[in-house]
Image (cartoon, rainbow, N blue to C red; front, side, top):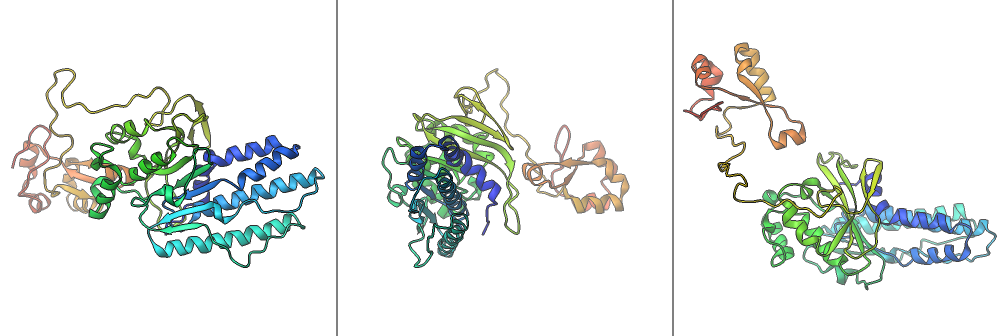
Length: 405
């Protein structure tokens, strides 16, 4: 289980709905009618995490809403308003989809525990308010199944004006890492809707289904994603179609993901909030704790207009075709790990000047150090009898100007 940290969960839910609710509370202070309206409102909102795992997003959201409920009651009491405690926020407002049955059980149990904790806190802060935990009631609607094969509108039905929020941290998988079943999931979601979908990351399926759920309604969503879906070739494939249905409401630009798992996922992520294309929303781009407010957020998570860079097969300026970028063809024989490099140059210091630092995308992202033995023909003749070179021989060399055997 990868338990998402509370600060990261707050980055998802605060700009999606919590900031708005808290602002409404501050504006309603001293006004009984507005406080009662907000109290009723928070008891009607529905929430769903369609990749809920062990339920942390749902649990933190439930606790935040219960705390807001407590704060409203305290404000009413401070105003001298005589009120009988009637619960507003309940577990019935929370929905989730998770493919692992054990994780579903953990989510249900965690929601019951969260309910008990908030019931205790309610009585501590408002002595006359008592909300018994027992007997246990339904702990939300947590469905065990493949979210990409299920109809989200049947799990959480919603009308055009209903206040509904989807959020979560769906699984990340590049298109080259997907297994047969996951590729089939992608086909189920995208076929007939988006061309070239096979080049998309697995997480794009949640954005597609989320956009379909949100479109034409007041529902909104916010998902964590690897930043790859806002870069390069995935942007024209995915976002050209999504932006016909939705708009980007807010975004956290790239930052390193961390959670409470024993082994943190070392990925760069973004957080993207979306609403229907006609919704009147304030648009914000966040970097760490600061943000800018702008009129439009592009799929590259920048300001400006709706400009998407698409690939072209022909040069704009009659330049020669680029057949390959960086393509090592040595079979891996002349690429050295950091340990192999240290061992080689310690044994044969004269080799050091023939090594170059070698950086691929994986090395850059994960901070791995590798080296390449980089030889032109003249260099090769000088050191061809070196034991390291001979042991790595019978392959094609890295060369500055040409390759040879």
